[in-house]
Length: 301
Image (cartoon, one colour):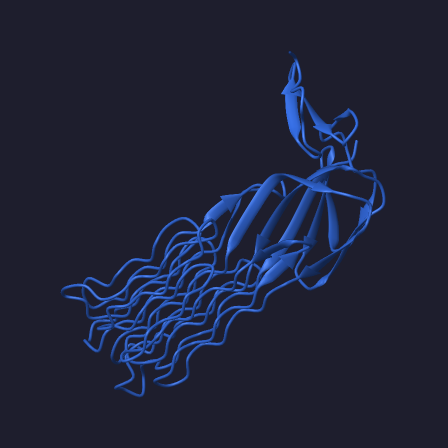
């Protein structure tokens, strides 16, 4: 038989290179030929496709359906941990689907804020969730200083230098942060959408995990990278750069004057961990995670 004989409502089937969907009584063409018209966010065109980018909360309203869209939902990144040797914040959760069915209705879009960085010897704050209709990406876990555990989230936060517990990520959205290993002198990197964070192996902090690339806008961009850990108390200008995907730089070690940096806005990157706080020229504070983003793409002609 060319088609299943006992389908359930909303089952899909591909035949002859064309996709069909069972509407409860018959097989309906479901080929991405276009959802007609929609409003919300900043709208751009990429060939035969419309792209709606939400950098702040709003509503995606579909006026003609059913068909499917391609979405990317990235939550806010977690804030980096404070001194000493603070862990990087975890990236916001990353969810992407190229065949998500929509109907003629309004869909709520919420953009998660990045979590604040830890001030002094304090943990950072978790990132906030981002939402597109029924789809939720979880905010990134916060980084921690020495003596405190990091937070769980879309991707987990990195720990302070000697802390042996890492923040965990949500399956399908991100990975765990890193925690203490032998010879570590700096803080440890936050997790990202592509991999776990990197542990410090010496004076510099651990690298934040790589984010994931997406070409949903028509141009490849990395999202949801983990924040780097803060550097150690040793002299020498040690610091760790940020990751692809908007993760922040870790603060420099003793006497460097190199500040950690925040995760990049609208990437969900984790914030950088604070450097060693034993000198007025070093940076004891962690920095904030980057805010999230929701992007929706569909064929319109």
